[in-house]
Length: 273
Image (cartoon, rainbow, N blue to C red; front, side, top):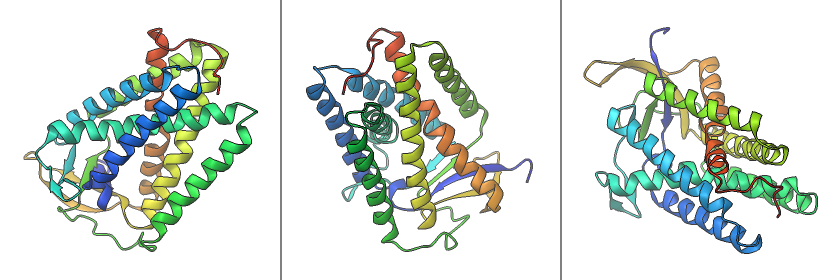
């Protein structure tokens, strides 16, 4: 097992249904518009959304072209878009990257503000509860999964060299910015990260409980095929899912905020919400 690969599995609709990804992309843009209209037309959220969409689209393109993420059929409201990378890659960049980042900013900014803290904390809790209950409609199936099934919608090798380098660079950028930026910006970045962690943890737990996300171990052969795929032992599964929540879908998104700050696109001042 020491020399085997660890795979993140999406075993249900979100791995192949791009309808929710389109909706999340639109919601993300609407959040940007909402903040722009309610905060003296500041463009902070638009910049975060743009950087997030571009960076994560590039990451997804790299993952898929290299075979590190194996996706099966892709559908958008019933239409087969399996080979339309020009559409699927940006949708993944916006929904899986930019959307999560602006969710972190939306609630982080408002929970930091004492005047809006209580209201937006309640809204955040209700959103998480709604997400959790929506998944639970599928029932509890965390022990009833098709581990090793090659037709699974999405299988991603979690620790290939290229991905590790990308993650290290993004984490380094996040930590460097948090360590060197102003106090107000640091608080904003940390709160954004914390909100993303909580949001993704709830999402991941919901998918795991309903048998829609799990971890596998196995071998990637020289021809790109797989062998000896099976459900990961509990400790490895927990560790891999925790790593995904804490690093892969939270900390490495902080540069979506840091880069606009460094480029002077976002002013270093206390957030007004």
